[in-house]
Length: 47
Image (cartoon, rainbow, N blue to C red):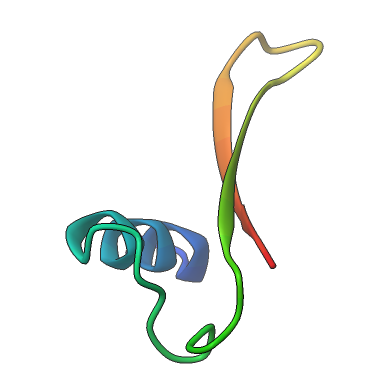
């Protein structure tokens, strides 16, 4: 099961950067970062 962040990211990318509900009408960015200990890449939507 995908998390709400995963669903938001997928919808944002599929709609060429247009955010849908509940982000509709707000500026949304996708923050890419690397975990300090794990070294894994993470992507987090932020308004």
